[in-house]
Image 1 (cartoon, rainbow, N blue to C red):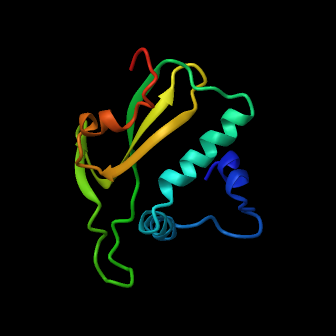
Image 2: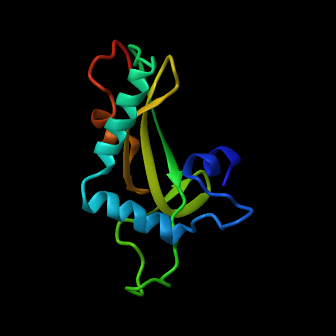
Length: 136
């Protein structure tokens, strides 16, 4: 975990370990179960806008593979059903994918969608623009 990320989430690696993959997946599932992911992103975007960060007229759309635990060492003794395999180059991954909409001027993420890794980037294209772009 990078220094910036540790500071952002309040983890002091000298005193406590960084959360492991299973903990992060449980947190993600809690956000999804209670419909908080979109609300949290909207709150962050509102805070940024209040502090002078405005969304420009362009959105960069990209996706990245998000490492997920492949272990079956959890309470249910099975793999997460939302995690699937995908091939990038000559390497296979059993992970998730983060699709992001990024403001072309400020480089701030304004929208995001998490999917199984086997979902093609084009499947999330309509969900990422904020609607006021002049280009994507």
